[in-house]
Image (cartoon, rainbow over all chains, first blue to last red; front, top):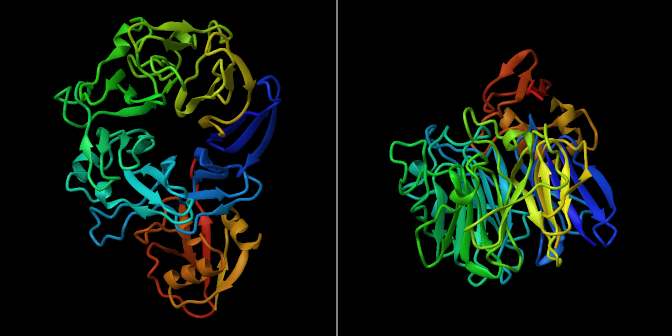
Length: 370
Length: 87
């Protein structure tokens, strides 16, 4: 059975299929009215599920289930910055944005990225969280995370990625300074942005300052990183440090702006993006009102348009950072949650698409439960 | 004891109650007492720097409270509201 965990601006839902990705049944809403930025199940123990939530009024929290979603409790100590008596440096978590299950060798460990930019870790399945001083107290923190900058929802540490070969080797993505790397499990961090454009800064190729919307490791080749940036689609093959803008191979009238990029679970040359209009005043909708996924099968040298099933015209939605995912089947199933509250799926690696949910609130996250 | 009005957004923490009693000689202490009995409620009202969250409003009687260090006298009422916060 495939289980889709959906976080929205107004709560969470679960869609379960009939075992063949045909019919889908809905469970929910869960925590109706809560802004759910991320809803994730633990691949090391799928009964553990965490949800990053807040409301328009209330402060942020993490809801936890240890029984596959049957019951939920709130984290005893949600992510929170250390106390400060200096009003200029007294940070408060507005919301947790990204939840990352820890390395396979570290059961119970979770990582969280927040707005304002912050990195937090839990060693007890999300019950209590600690600020990661190696990033949050780094001497460069205030340059990497200038207050007031970032997205309309605030500056964000929007993603954490762990090398499956080495628990101490991690990457993170921010909306204020781009991508960072650690080799010592978060004790120290180095910017990793060479070749990535920041066309909104005086120096368009700075050491840091980029807006990394999404990064992903190729599961079968963790030396390959994909990045959907505010300024295009990039690929980096380690140990190299120079990103290549593979989005330049996409059609000029479409552009290579978007929020997310999804790698194929087995083929490290294949990835999918969902372009949005990043011209003029940045409408952030499907270019021309014609939604489409673009796939590369050759590491970004060329791209194929995949729009069968999507509206041929007047389709004005996009897909946010956490709202695009793949399953493990062959052929791979792809799922995207749209800003208009629809969930679309493809059972044939993007060739054809169909809606499996409509009329949900704006979708913020979509994950396949392991 | 202090009478505390709980807004609808936080009723679930208090078993559905919209009015509870709590102990304390300042708002800070009352929130601590509430959090001991209704875990998690304090952090949803004030942040980790003890600032009242932007869309929460606290009143003691008819006086708006801006600082959780404000003293409370026995028998006073602390009213917690969810302010207007958009759609």
